[in-house]
Image (cartoon, rainbow, N blue to C red; front, side, top):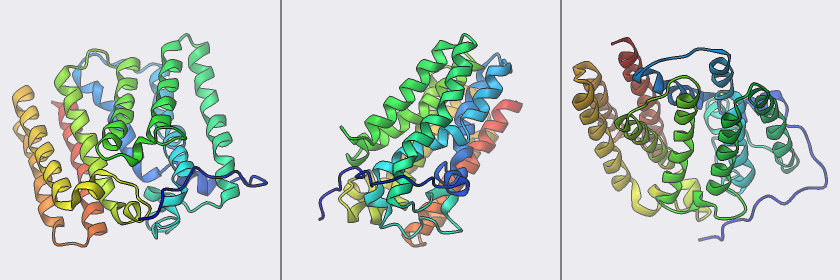
Length: 293
């Protein structure tokens, strides 16, 4: 097993990645997960759609994507250079581009420049708690994948930290537009995010293993990882039925088991990717049912 590489050494110069590459860095294909997390609290009570809501809705798309995934691209260059899906026309929206060292070196400045307008608008608008939220999001990214702990390379801790980062998006929705989210809603959101994180580790399992990045699926294998996914799907179905009594929404959660079973005969990448996409689709159907009930 090779040693894990250190964070990117700064080259002599910087090279702006370009608009298309920045859009790919922001993972347009994962934007639907951010929007789901941001809007989920709306199903639990009063909903306020003021200017801060719309600003938050914009922020959780490309700007937040640049913060989360641009950060990871900068520190995960040793893993990414082994990935055949980087910069592929069919997968770049989900897996991002393959940037040169000079382009990677410019990413921190670009990410900072994109975050500042939102921090200023919320700060000047009297929403200092949202500026504090942005600081927490940056801290979470630093813990997950930075020059210190790099929890992204520690089994279970990686998935839990990434889940915490996504739960911060849910909390942003609570802070801005829908206070009063109950405990079971937080548990449901955490289980949904954990499922996506586990499926994501299955997608990247071979590349992560090649550089010694011990994610959950690398450490415990595909079967154990898929078993955890099944347990979480069942738990989401139980939560839905017990706390809402909505049979159709409960059935939507159970439908996830069909997607897992359907994907089992497929090769690792196709199986994991199809299930990942299916889970996002089912979570959106579930959320729409909850909002319209």
